[in-house]
Image (cartoon, rainbow, N blue to C red; front, side, top):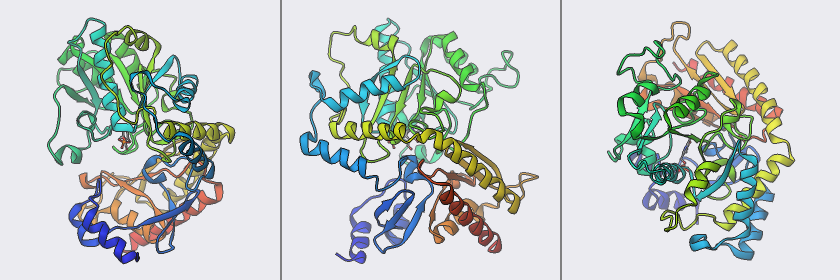
Length: 450
Ligand code: PLP
Protein backbone atom coordinates (compact mmCIF):
# COMPACT_ATOMS: atom_id res chain seq x y z
CA UNK A 1 0.00 0.00 0.00
CA UNK A 2 1.40 3.41 -0.92
CA UNK A 3 1.37 6.41 1.40
CA UNK A 4 -1.03 8.12 -1.04
CA UNK A 5 -3.42 5.18 -0.75
CA UNK A 6 -3.30 5.34 3.05
CA UNK A 7 -4.05 9.05 2.96
CA UNK A 8 -7.01 8.46 0.62
CA UNK A 9 -8.46 5.74 2.86
CA UNK A 10 -7.94 7.95 5.89
CA UNK A 11 -9.95 10.76 4.28
CA UNK A 12 -12.65 8.38 3.15
CA UNK A 13 -13.11 6.02 6.09
CA UNK A 14 -11.62 7.50 9.26
CA UNK A 15 -13.63 10.15 11.13
CA UNK A 16 -11.05 11.83 13.38
CA UNK A 17 -11.63 13.00 16.96
CA UNK A 18 -11.21 16.70 17.78
CA UNK A 19 -10.45 17.54 14.15
CA UNK A 20 -12.25 19.69 11.58
CA UNK A 21 -13.91 17.01 9.41
CA UNK A 22 -14.13 19.39 6.45
CA UNK A 23 -10.46 20.35 6.59
CA UNK A 24 -9.48 16.73 7.09
CA UNK A 25 -11.42 15.52 4.09
CA UNK A 26 -9.90 18.29 2.00
CA UNK A 27 -6.31 17.99 3.21
CA UNK A 28 -5.96 14.44 4.50
CA UNK A 29 -3.93 13.32 7.51
CA UNK A 30 -1.30 15.76 8.76
CA UNK A 31 1.11 12.94 9.57
CA UNK A 32 0.81 9.20 9.48
CA UNK A 33 2.98 8.07 12.37
CA UNK A 34 4.96 4.87 11.98
CA UNK A 35 7.38 4.44 14.89
CA UNK A 36 9.22 6.25 17.61
CA UNK A 37 12.11 6.28 20.05
CA UNK A 38 12.09 8.30 23.27
CA UNK A 39 10.95 11.85 22.54
CA UNK A 40 11.17 11.25 18.77
CA UNK A 41 8.47 9.96 16.42
CA UNK A 42 8.71 9.15 12.73
CA UNK A 43 6.14 9.28 9.99
CA UNK A 44 5.64 6.92 7.06
CA UNK A 45 7.71 9.24 4.84
CA UNK A 46 10.71 8.85 7.12
CA UNK A 47 10.54 12.31 8.73
CA UNK A 48 11.55 12.54 12.39
CA UNK A 49 9.70 14.83 14.81
CA UNK A 50 10.17 15.76 18.46
CA UNK A 51 7.03 14.96 20.39
CA UNK A 52 6.87 18.09 22.56
CA UNK A 53 3.52 17.23 24.15
CA UNK A 54 3.84 13.45 24.71
CA UNK A 55 1.09 13.07 22.08
CA UNK A 56 -1.91 13.78 24.34
CA UNK A 57 -0.01 14.33 27.60
CA UNK A 58 0.14 10.58 27.99
CA UNK A 59 3.33 9.05 26.53
CA UNK A 60 5.20 9.70 29.75
CA UNK A 61 7.94 7.09 29.27
CA UNK A 62 8.45 8.08 25.64
CA UNK A 63 8.03 6.13 22.43
CA UNK A 64 9.41 2.70 21.56
CA UNK A 65 9.78 1.65 25.20
CA UNK A 66 10.59 -2.02 24.73
CA UNK A 67 9.96 -3.13 28.32
CA UNK A 68 6.36 -1.92 28.11
CA UNK A 69 5.95 -3.70 24.78
CA UNK A 70 7.41 -6.88 26.31
CA UNK A 71 5.08 -6.67 29.30
CA UNK A 72 2.09 -6.40 26.95
CA UNK A 73 3.37 -9.23 24.75
CA UNK A 74 4.01 -11.53 27.67
CA UNK A 75 0.56 -11.00 29.16
CA UNK A 76 -1.19 -11.20 25.79
CA UNK A 77 0.50 -14.49 25.01
CA UNK A 78 -0.57 -15.91 28.39
CA UNK A 79 -4.06 -14.47 28.76
CA UNK A 80 -4.84 -11.30 26.81
CA UNK A 81 -8.23 -10.76 28.37
CA UNK A 82 -10.43 -12.08 31.11
CA UNK A 83 -13.59 -10.75 32.74
CA UNK A 84 -13.73 -8.89 36.06
CA UNK A 85 -17.52 -9.14 36.28
CA UNK A 86 -19.27 -11.30 38.90
CA UNK A 87 -16.11 -11.67 40.99
CA UNK A 88 -13.82 -13.08 38.29
CA UNK A 89 -10.33 -11.67 38.65
CA UNK A 90 -6.81 -11.78 37.23
CA UNK A 91 -3.32 -11.37 38.63
CA UNK A 92 -2.17 -8.14 36.91
CA UNK A 93 -5.39 -6.33 37.92
CA UNK A 94 -5.02 -7.47 41.54
CA UNK A 95 -1.32 -6.59 41.72
CA UNK A 96 -1.88 -3.19 40.15
CA UNK A 97 -4.75 -2.43 42.57
CA UNK A 98 -2.44 -3.22 45.49
CA UNK A 99 0.34 -1.10 43.96
CA UNK A 100 -1.98 1.88 43.40
CA UNK A 101 -3.22 1.66 46.99
CA UNK A 102 0.37 1.81 48.24
CA UNK A 103 1.32 4.69 45.91
CA UNK A 104 -1.72 6.93 46.19
CA UNK A 105 -1.75 9.60 48.89
CA UNK A 106 -3.59 9.08 52.18
CA UNK A 107 -6.08 6.24 52.35
CA UNK A 108 -7.04 6.18 48.66
CA UNK A 109 -6.98 2.42 48.95
CA UNK A 110 -9.31 0.87 46.38
CA UNK A 111 -9.69 1.18 42.62
CA UNK A 112 -12.52 0.83 40.12
CA UNK A 113 -10.96 0.20 36.69
CA UNK A 114 -12.02 1.82 33.41
CA UNK A 115 -10.39 2.20 29.98
CA UNK A 116 -9.75 5.95 30.02
CA UNK A 117 -10.24 9.37 31.54
CA UNK A 118 -13.81 10.17 30.48
CA UNK A 119 -15.05 6.82 31.71
CA UNK A 120 -13.21 7.42 34.97
CA UNK A 121 -14.90 10.77 35.55
CA UNK A 122 -18.37 9.43 34.73
CA UNK A 123 -17.62 6.54 37.09
CA UNK A 124 -16.51 8.96 39.83
CA UNK A 125 -19.78 10.91 39.53
CA UNK A 126 -21.79 7.68 39.77
CA UNK A 127 -19.79 6.36 42.71
CA UNK A 128 -20.16 9.69 44.53
CA UNK A 129 -23.93 9.64 44.02
CA UNK A 130 -24.10 5.98 44.99
CA UNK A 131 -22.11 6.71 48.14
CA UNK A 132 -24.60 9.36 49.24
CA UNK A 133 -27.48 6.95 48.57
CA UNK A 134 -25.76 4.41 50.76
CA UNK A 135 -25.51 7.13 53.40
CA UNK A 136 -29.29 7.80 53.17
CA UNK A 137 -28.84 11.07 51.26
CA UNK A 138 -30.08 10.33 47.73
CA UNK A 139 -30.77 14.03 47.13
CA UNK A 140 -27.02 14.75 47.05
CA UNK A 141 -26.51 14.43 43.28
CA UNK A 142 -25.14 17.71 41.91
CA UNK A 143 -21.57 18.17 40.76
CA UNK A 144 -19.55 21.38 40.85
CA UNK A 145 -16.73 21.66 38.35
CA UNK A 146 -14.50 24.61 37.48
CA UNK A 147 -14.54 26.98 34.55
CA UNK A 148 -11.77 26.14 32.01
CA UNK A 149 -11.80 22.49 33.10
CA UNK A 150 -11.45 19.50 30.80
CA UNK A 151 -12.80 16.19 32.04
CA UNK A 152 -13.50 14.28 28.83
CA UNK A 153 -16.30 13.75 26.36
CA UNK A 154 -18.74 11.11 27.61
CA UNK A 155 -21.89 13.09 28.32
CA UNK A 156 -21.44 13.58 32.07
CA UNK A 157 -17.69 14.24 31.82
CA UNK A 158 -18.31 16.58 28.93
CA UNK A 159 -20.93 18.50 30.88
CA UNK A 160 -18.30 18.97 33.58
CA UNK A 161 -15.83 20.06 30.89
CA UNK A 162 -15.92 23.82 30.42
CA UNK A 163 -14.15 24.31 27.11
CA UNK A 164 -17.01 25.74 25.01
CA UNK A 165 -16.27 23.88 21.76
CA UNK A 166 -17.10 20.58 23.45
CA UNK A 167 -20.57 21.80 24.43
CA UNK A 168 -21.27 23.51 21.12
CA UNK A 169 -20.48 20.38 19.11
CA UNK A 170 -23.65 18.38 19.81
CA UNK A 171 -25.49 20.31 22.50
CA UNK A 172 -25.45 17.21 24.70
CA UNK A 173 -25.51 17.99 28.41
CA UNK A 174 -26.96 16.49 31.55
CA UNK A 175 -28.60 18.56 34.28
CA UNK A 176 -27.10 19.10 37.71
CA UNK A 177 -23.51 20.04 36.83
CA UNK A 178 -22.40 23.62 37.55
CA UNK A 179 -19.22 25.61 37.00
CA UNK A 180 -17.46 27.78 39.54
CA UNK A 181 -14.80 30.40 38.91
CA UNK A 182 -11.45 28.69 39.13
CA UNK A 183 -8.67 29.16 41.61
CA UNK A 184 -10.44 31.06 44.31
CA UNK A 185 -12.69 29.44 46.85
CA UNK A 186 -14.10 32.78 47.90
CA UNK A 187 -14.42 35.83 45.73
CA UNK A 188 -12.49 38.99 46.56
CA UNK A 189 -14.90 39.66 49.42
CA UNK A 190 -14.10 36.43 51.25
CA UNK A 191 -16.98 35.02 53.25
CA UNK A 192 -18.86 38.30 52.78
CA UNK A 193 -19.11 37.55 49.07
CA UNK A 194 -22.16 38.54 47.07
CA UNK A 195 -24.64 36.14 45.60
CA UNK A 196 -23.92 35.47 41.97
CA UNK A 197 -20.19 36.03 42.15
CA UNK A 198 -19.65 32.44 40.99
CA UNK A 199 -17.07 31.30 43.50
CA UNK A 200 -17.39 27.72 44.79
CA UNK A 201 -18.78 28.93 48.10
CA UNK A 202 -21.42 30.93 46.24
CA UNK A 203 -22.50 27.89 44.19
CA UNK A 204 -22.70 25.73 47.30
CA UNK A 205 -24.90 28.30 49.02
CA UNK A 206 -27.02 28.82 45.92
CA UNK A 207 -27.66 25.14 45.21
CA UNK A 208 -27.58 24.00 48.83
CA UNK A 209 -24.90 21.68 50.21
CA UNK A 210 -27.58 19.05 50.83
CA UNK A 211 -28.00 18.66 47.06
CA UNK A 212 -24.32 18.51 46.11
CA UNK A 213 -22.51 15.19 45.76
CA UNK A 214 -19.04 16.35 44.77
CA UNK A 215 -16.65 19.00 43.56
CA UNK A 216 -14.37 17.89 40.71
CA UNK A 217 -11.19 19.64 39.65
CA UNK A 218 -7.89 19.02 37.92
CA UNK A 219 -5.03 19.77 40.35
CA UNK A 220 -3.43 21.64 37.42
CA UNK A 221 -5.84 22.49 34.61
CA UNK A 222 -4.54 20.97 31.38
CA UNK A 223 -6.42 21.36 28.10
CA UNK A 224 -8.22 24.44 29.45
CA UNK A 225 -4.90 26.31 29.31
CA UNK A 226 -2.26 24.85 31.69
CA UNK A 227 -3.28 26.79 34.79
CA UNK A 228 -1.37 26.03 37.99
CA UNK A 229 -3.42 26.91 41.09
CA UNK A 230 -2.02 29.32 43.66
CA UNK A 231 -0.66 27.67 46.82
CA UNK A 232 -3.44 27.18 49.32
CA UNK A 233 -6.18 26.73 46.75
CA UNK A 234 -6.51 22.95 46.78
CA UNK A 235 -6.23 22.98 50.57
CA UNK A 236 -9.07 25.53 50.73
CA UNK A 237 -11.28 23.43 48.44
CA UNK A 238 -10.57 20.40 50.63
CA UNK A 239 -11.60 22.36 53.69
CA UNK A 240 -14.74 23.72 52.06
CA UNK A 241 -15.77 20.20 51.00
CA UNK A 242 -15.22 18.94 54.55
CA UNK A 243 -17.22 21.81 56.04
CA UNK A 244 -20.18 21.11 53.75
CA UNK A 245 -20.06 17.33 53.60
CA UNK A 246 -19.23 17.27 49.90
CA UNK A 247 -16.86 14.78 48.26
CA UNK A 248 -13.75 16.09 46.51
CA UNK A 249 -12.78 14.45 43.21
CA UNK A 250 -9.30 15.14 41.81
CA UNK A 251 -9.00 14.49 38.08
CA UNK A 252 -5.39 13.28 37.85
CA UNK A 253 -5.75 12.06 34.26
CA UNK A 254 -2.93 14.38 33.10
CA UNK A 255 -1.24 15.11 36.43
CA UNK A 256 -0.87 11.52 37.63
CA UNK A 257 2.22 9.33 37.33
CA UNK A 258 4.99 11.86 37.53
CA UNK A 259 3.89 14.58 35.12
CA UNK A 260 4.00 17.37 37.75
CA UNK A 261 7.19 16.22 39.48
CA UNK A 262 5.29 14.18 42.07
CA UNK A 263 3.62 10.82 41.60
CA UNK A 264 0.23 12.60 41.76
CA UNK A 265 -0.56 16.28 41.26
CA UNK A 266 -2.36 16.72 44.59
CA UNK A 267 0.87 15.79 46.39
CA UNK A 268 2.27 19.20 45.44
CA UNK A 269 -0.13 20.64 48.00
CA UNK A 270 -0.48 17.75 50.46
CA UNK A 271 -4.19 17.29 49.74
CA UNK A 272 -6.01 13.94 49.78
CA UNK A 273 -9.19 13.93 47.67
CA UNK A 274 -12.03 11.47 48.35
CA UNK A 275 -11.93 10.14 44.81
CA UNK A 276 -9.12 10.42 42.30
CA UNK A 277 -9.50 9.68 38.59
CA UNK A 278 -6.52 8.37 36.64
CA UNK A 279 -5.76 7.32 33.03
CA UNK A 280 -3.21 8.43 30.39
CA UNK A 281 0.19 8.24 32.15
CA UNK A 282 -0.67 5.06 34.06
CA UNK A 283 0.41 3.08 30.98
CA UNK A 284 2.22 5.90 29.14
CA UNK A 285 -0.39 5.31 26.44
CA UNK A 286 0.83 1.78 25.70
CA UNK A 287 -2.57 0.37 26.64
CA UNK A 288 -6.00 1.87 27.31
CA UNK A 289 -6.43 2.01 31.06
CA UNK A 290 -8.06 4.29 33.60
CA UNK A 291 -9.52 4.07 37.05
CA UNK A 292 -11.09 5.76 40.03
CA UNK A 293 -9.25 5.52 43.34
CA UNK A 294 -11.48 5.85 46.38
CA UNK A 295 -10.78 6.49 50.03
CA UNK A 296 -11.23 3.87 52.66
CA UNK A 297 -14.41 5.34 54.16
CA UNK A 298 -16.11 5.35 50.75
CA UNK A 299 -14.93 1.84 49.98
CA UNK A 300 -16.21 0.70 53.38
CA UNK A 301 -19.63 2.23 52.72
CA UNK A 302 -19.86 0.73 49.20
CA UNK A 303 -18.99 -2.80 50.31
CA UNK A 304 -22.09 -2.83 52.51
CA UNK A 305 -24.18 -3.06 49.35
CA UNK A 306 -25.61 -6.54 48.82
CA UNK A 307 -27.11 -6.10 45.37
CA UNK A 308 -25.00 -5.91 42.19
CA UNK A 309 -22.90 -2.76 41.76
CA UNK A 310 -24.42 -2.29 38.31
CA UNK A 311 -21.62 -0.36 36.68
CA UNK A 312 -18.55 -1.55 34.79
CA UNK A 313 -16.95 -1.83 31.39
CA UNK A 314 -16.00 -4.93 29.44
CA UNK A 315 -12.41 -3.77 29.83
CA UNK A 316 -12.52 -2.92 33.56
CA UNK A 317 -9.46 -4.68 34.98
CA UNK A 318 -8.08 -5.65 31.55
CA UNK A 319 -5.16 -8.00 32.28
CA UNK A 320 -2.91 -6.76 29.46
CA UNK A 321 -3.56 -3.09 30.23
CA UNK A 322 -2.92 -3.72 33.94
CA UNK A 323 0.32 -5.61 33.20
CA UNK A 324 1.51 -2.60 31.20
CA UNK A 325 0.45 -0.27 34.03
CA UNK A 326 2.46 -2.29 36.54
CA UNK A 327 5.56 -2.25 34.34
CA UNK A 328 5.13 1.48 33.71
CA UNK A 329 5.10 2.21 37.46
CA UNK A 330 8.04 -0.14 38.02
CA UNK A 331 10.11 1.81 35.48
CA UNK A 332 9.05 5.21 36.89
CA UNK A 333 10.31 4.11 40.30
CA UNK A 334 13.37 2.12 39.20
CA UNK A 335 14.74 4.94 37.02
CA UNK A 336 13.95 7.69 39.58
CA UNK A 337 12.06 9.48 36.85
CA UNK A 338 10.18 11.77 39.20
CA UNK A 339 13.46 13.27 40.45
CA UNK A 340 14.49 13.57 36.82
CA UNK A 341 11.26 15.44 36.01
CA UNK A 342 12.02 18.00 38.72
CA UNK A 343 15.51 18.54 37.22
CA UNK A 344 14.10 18.87 33.73
CA UNK A 345 11.50 21.33 35.04
CA UNK A 346 14.40 23.61 35.97
CA UNK A 347 15.92 23.19 32.49
CA UNK A 348 12.59 23.98 30.86
CA UNK A 349 12.13 27.07 33.03
CA UNK A 350 15.64 28.19 32.04
CA UNK A 351 14.64 27.69 28.42
CA UNK A 352 11.46 29.70 28.92
CA UNK A 353 13.46 32.58 30.46
CA UNK A 354 15.76 32.51 27.42
CA UNK A 355 12.75 32.70 25.08
CA UNK A 356 11.23 35.53 27.13
CA UNK A 357 14.50 37.46 26.95
CA UNK A 358 14.71 37.10 23.20
CA UNK A 359 11.05 37.51 22.26
CA UNK A 360 8.84 40.17 23.79
CA UNK A 361 5.75 38.33 22.53
CA UNK A 362 6.38 35.41 24.94
CA UNK A 363 4.79 35.75 28.36
CA UNK A 364 3.04 33.98 31.23
CA UNK A 365 5.47 31.06 31.07
CA UNK A 366 4.65 28.35 33.60
CA UNK A 367 5.76 24.86 34.50
CA UNK A 368 5.13 22.37 37.25
CA UNK A 369 7.21 19.32 36.56
CA UNK A 370 6.88 18.81 32.82
CA UNK A 371 3.35 20.18 32.59
CA UNK A 372 4.10 23.55 31.08
CA UNK A 373 3.05 26.30 28.75
CA UNK A 374 3.30 29.96 27.78
CA UNK A 375 1.26 32.58 25.97
CA UNK A 376 1.78 34.80 22.96
CA UNK A 377 0.73 38.45 23.19
CA UNK A 378 1.20 41.25 20.65
CA UNK A 379 2.42 43.39 23.55
CA UNK A 380 3.03 41.63 26.82
CA UNK A 381 3.50 44.75 28.94
CA UNK A 382 0.04 46.08 28.19
CA UNK A 383 -1.31 42.52 27.80
CA UNK A 384 -2.56 43.33 24.30
CA UNK A 385 -3.54 40.10 22.59
CA UNK A 386 -2.79 39.39 18.95
CA UNK A 387 -5.51 40.22 16.49
CA UNK A 388 -7.57 37.02 16.05
CA UNK A 389 -6.85 37.09 12.30
CA UNK A 390 -3.16 36.38 13.11
CA UNK A 391 -4.10 33.05 14.74
CA UNK A 392 -0.92 33.47 16.74
CA UNK A 393 -0.99 30.19 18.66
CA UNK A 394 -1.82 28.05 15.64
CA UNK A 395 0.66 29.90 13.41
CA UNK A 396 3.49 29.51 15.92
CA UNK A 397 2.73 25.81 16.37
CA UNK A 398 2.80 25.44 12.59
CA UNK A 399 6.24 27.12 12.46
CA UNK A 400 7.42 24.59 15.06
CA UNK A 401 5.90 21.78 13.02
CA UNK A 402 7.83 22.92 9.93
CA UNK A 403 10.94 22.58 12.09
CA UNK A 404 9.93 19.07 13.19
CA UNK A 405 8.66 19.88 16.66
CA UNK A 406 5.11 18.91 17.62
CA UNK A 407 3.42 21.29 20.08
CA UNK A 408 -0.19 22.23 20.67
CA UNK A 409 -2.07 25.53 20.84
CA UNK A 410 -4.82 25.52 23.47
CA UNK A 411 -8.20 27.27 23.21
CA UNK A 412 -7.04 28.86 19.98
CA UNK A 413 -10.60 29.14 18.66
CA UNK A 414 -11.57 31.12 21.76
CA UNK A 415 -8.91 33.69 20.96
CA UNK A 416 -6.40 32.47 23.53
CA UNK A 417 -2.87 31.84 22.31
CA UNK A 418 -1.68 29.37 24.89
CA UNK A 419 1.07 26.96 23.89
CA UNK A 420 1.28 23.63 25.72
CA UNK A 421 4.74 22.13 26.24
CA UNK A 422 4.87 18.68 27.85
CA UNK A 423 7.55 16.35 26.48
CA UNK A 424 7.99 12.76 27.67
CA UNK A 425 9.34 12.58 31.23
CA UNK A 426 12.45 10.80 29.96
CA UNK A 427 13.68 13.85 28.00
CA UNK A 428 17.40 14.63 28.44
CA UNK A 429 19.01 18.03 29.00
CA UNK A 430 20.36 18.06 25.42
CA UNK A 431 16.96 17.18 24.01
CA UNK A 432 15.38 19.96 26.06
CA UNK A 433 17.90 22.41 24.59
CA UNK A 434 17.10 21.17 21.10
CA UNK A 435 13.40 21.76 21.72
CA UNK A 436 13.98 25.29 23.05
CA UNK A 437 16.25 26.07 20.12
CA UNK A 438 13.51 25.08 17.66
CA UNK A 439 10.97 27.23 19.51
CA UNK A 440 13.41 30.14 19.36
CA UNK A 441 13.75 29.73 15.58
CA UNK A 442 10.01 29.34 15.15
CA UNK A 443 9.36 32.54 17.14
CA UNK A 444 11.86 34.36 14.95
CA UNK A 445 10.05 33.19 11.81
CA UNK A 446 6.64 33.95 13.30
CA UNK A 447 7.64 37.54 14.04
CA UNK A 448 9.16 38.01 10.60
CA UNK A 449 5.91 36.96 8.94
CA UNK A 450 3.71 39.30 11.00
N1 PLP B 1 -9.48 14.45 32.29
C1 PLP B 1 -8.45 15.19 31.88
C2 PLP B 1 -7.80 16.14 32.84
C3 PLP B 1 -7.97 15.07 30.56
O1 PLP B 1 -6.96 15.83 30.14
C4 PLP B 1 -8.59 14.15 29.70
C5 PLP B 1 -8.11 13.97 28.30
O2 PLP B 1 -7.38 14.76 27.77
C6 PLP B 1 -9.68 13.40 30.17
C7 PLP B 1 -10.08 13.58 31.46
C8 PLP B 1 -10.39 12.45 29.28
O3 PLP B 1 -9.65 11.30 29.11
P1 PLP B 1 -9.93 10.33 27.86
O4 PLP B 1 -9.65 11.11 26.64
O5 PLP B 1 -8.98 9.19 28.12
O6 PLP B 1 -11.35 9.89 27.96
